[in-house]
Image (tube, rainbow over all chains, first blue to last red; front, side, top):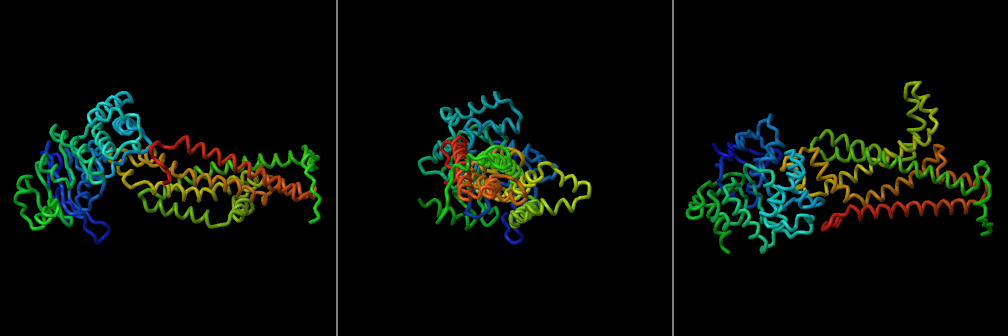
Length: 245
Length: 243
């Protein structure tokens, strides 16, 4: 039983622009899948459909046996079980780091303040930011903020994690501290879907790579195969551009 | 100019029999403050509701909010006060209309409602703008951790939006105070009304309106300082609102 199953997903923006064209793929428990492709290819949109941040007009998405696309699904409850990390961190600027980590636990999961704090401190320790617990997001560097954002997703005990270009907004010297946390997470067996251009990360931890272009899943292959023998011309071109440096 | 200045007039007894002319102005000030504060509360409550409605993902509700804003923003305040005071009571069922017309604090209540709704349209604009200024990702981040729309507004969007809005809201509060002077046209003896009465009784027009001017300036200075203190109190470390 896959953790995430995406079947024939179609999405339009307005009536003319089709953002996702008949996308089908699945992610097994414990699997790390990297989604890459040129900008505007629909990769961010695709992972946002998984926790219904982006509605779809056709197809079916199932996460941990819950049908995302069914109108009967309790979406807040589902979203609480799917961790999401954004390109621009999106920490809540008016809340201390601890409160950023406790808000969802208390308001969505109904945990007590003590329980939530304990969990928050444990996760902050894990991402190496225990000393910053009482600060506000604006007082941290980008890399630190993104690590807090990962911790904020993890305190909810998610069944899988979605990363939407988690390092694209970071200064180069901060990318590794974030990738290190993600590598650790992958090693522990977290199911992850990661939209990224960090091909080094993909090579090191991804089990599979999905390549998208113009709203289509063009390639969906084990990592080794994808880098060694991309089947499509579009993927070859993309790789040659991105791996040049 | 041949004008006989006489500041001592302020301490002369006023013909209304309630003390000096200065006391009369102070009574006016009390009504100005009461009217402004009450109207401001009406403006904040309704402005916030309508402002939030305009940012919700329901088109019909946003349209309704737009209509509200356009209605109250585009009719002159003076006309609105006259409508509330002279026209609406006539349109009500007879008993209600009589009841409204006989209200003891009719002019005051009408001013609170009239100025309150008028200002609420401006507050609504600020609230919507404040919410829309926030990065789109903030709403998504709240939604993504499982918060409902109401919770996302309550815990994430509104606390930041109100912080960003504080400086423009200060201006709107000052506007509310200044607009309270329009209420003299429906017979509320607020500060401007008192100054005019003083001038009519004493013929000391310059003293009356100079005193009123100074009192308005002081009152608005207090509000400005108070709002600045509030801004500083709720400022978020590491985050510069409005920058």
